[in-house]
Image 1 (cartoon, rainbow over the protein chains, first blue to last red):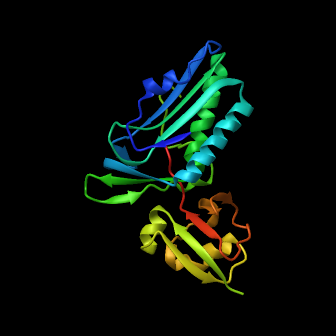
Image 2 (image 1 turned 180 degrees about the vertical axis):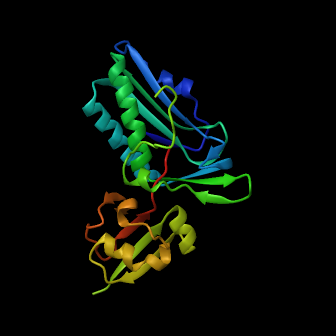
Length: 152
Length: 81
């Protein structure tokens, strides 16, 4: 688990997980989107409390290892100002078979979003800004029912 | 008896308080007491369950006891990823 103030380079991170015993690699990249809750977003700022984010992130990765038979897992989260399209968070998992890599990757990103002391401030096109605060996200992981997933 | 507690505010809490850290003298038994007593400082109307707390850099519960000299970190609802 790492907090970085520099561009996340998934290709380089992927190399750190390679293993002859791994038959699959699953990664998740979270990107900065240009819209949130109907407002046009210009850029975003992440505030991170590093000492506890790293400690809690490492704990989440250990929990994933205990829960799923995986080879390797890692996570990097950005801090500071990010522009639209930049990678804010990367999670990578390798395992012998794909099922556990998908499951562990999903577990890690869901826990990271609800447990790490990280806050984001959005800067809008209209000049306003605000701390993103999804109360239900903070309380527990949940689906966003208003967001329809194609094919479902 | 009042205790000297160092309180650290993050994100929206810090912006409301106008400082990132301050030492307060409060009559508090638990981290939850500290949160309630400092409502005017962090300005949050959020229920406790939506926020998190750490004591001396360890994640804690709102029922965790606070001692004289502790540093209590008040976290607004998180939004990583």
